[in-house]
Length: 285
Image (tube, rainbow, N blue to C red):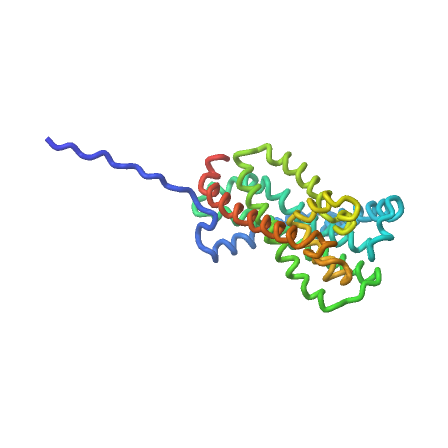
């Protein structure tokens, strides 16, 4: 009498970060991004104007405080546009990463579909924020010219700054969006962390002033991965005489190397975490 062998069951992993191929990934990403951009402003009385009004209102308050109360404006050339540019650039990171946290859970209906590339969701969120950033930069450059900053060839290097900012923002967005389905407290935690990061980044003040007033604090701020990005933007766009990242006034070369290493570590961690979490995301919803 013969007995049939019990069939062995094998684990079948869920859809990965890039399921369906690269072409389908970009098609879905652009579709999600454009849909979200239209949905945000469709039906509102002023549409895109609201996106510009928010940073401009905060900018007006901060310029008044730091120019006339704290009197930092007299120490920094072109301080109003220095502040506005920093706020718009960092605002892109805040907007993208904050919206990315619940993005996968919010798209539960399509996440449960087979062969849907998980990475398309946080990528679409970052792309939508990038659309807003590019439109906001038009307003920023109008202010820059109005405040007497002369155009120079280094303005052509702005895409380099945006590419570094985009890469770092996407990496962080990948981490928080992939972890949120399992750790729902991350939304509250992240709102606190972005506020702390805002003040720990040279947005309201240039790095050399932080180094001068508190060397230890300045050194810590120079380790922030966003610091060299904003400092380069300042040198290339607003003040060519400002210290470059890596110079003593800019935090020192060692601190610049550490900041770059941290950026690379975040990018590597983002890829590893997202690839690990992507196949099991549907189970956590």
